[in-house]
Image (cartoon, rainbow over all chains, first blue to last red; front, side, top):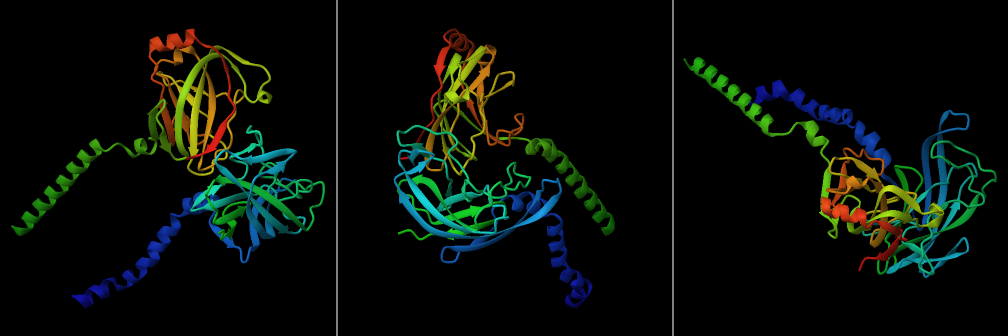
Length: 213
Length: 199
């Protein structure tokens, strides 16, 4: 009985895992194209505060042709410290009541033709993410709407940009090869960040583990 | 004889399964009805509701004929209406970073929808761990007030007829209260948002 069972089904039992894998692959379109492609998935983990990041993305050129671009940049996280306030366009900004501002100092190194505008940053604590520009008020307690700005490139020379989120436009002024940026993020008082994440487009991102005592 | 018994048993089993399937399909709603059914967190004024984006509490509302905008640069002159403005005070605690809060809408008893007017007031970007108090201003007809409820979806561009997930706040207004609110409707100054860390 045992011998005849294996004789009749052995081959198919061996093929079964392959068929299951093929079925999963055939039904993975939504997972791959609708979910994974639009969420942060693949981290470049920084070593000693330094991350060498490589990414590719597709965009439309000025001549309306679709093209694949690369994004190569070296990012160094030099400091993450709590601060009382910072100045923004002549206005002193502080954390909202019960919050604490954290200053993140970053150093960038990239070729001037790399598209690095419109990046996103988060401080993470216990899996909860905090974004720049939120929970911040002026020193007199009032709101300044739209305090967000370029996080990852110099404001006066951002280099090539995807201004409308699709098309590549070259900047008027060439961006230097190295530059520094400062990001401020407001966290509830007593919450300490354990990770800083930075990305330009999904699914690749940079992760800086933090150990703040 | 044994073969006949097996055939009868098989037929009976098949008939039983067909009956069971028929009975099940009569009590289980069709797939389309389930797929299109939104997840609604129903609440009333003053009671918080949790949904995908965070915790929402409508703390109160006013009915006005004129709203003085905030911030003034949104619209330099007061907004006036031949109908009514429903000015909603709400608090929001984000469960995750939310770049822009979705637009509120008002749904009347006849399922007509009225969207919030973004030119009259503004809210700030929420942050987890912080409570943000904001206002939404919705222009509607006075007849929309009795039985009206507020709806906050997860995305401003989500299909209003079938939002995937939304908070629904019953304003608990009857005809008499609606008449009184419309009769007393005056001018309201839109407020700046207020944000503070959760205790």
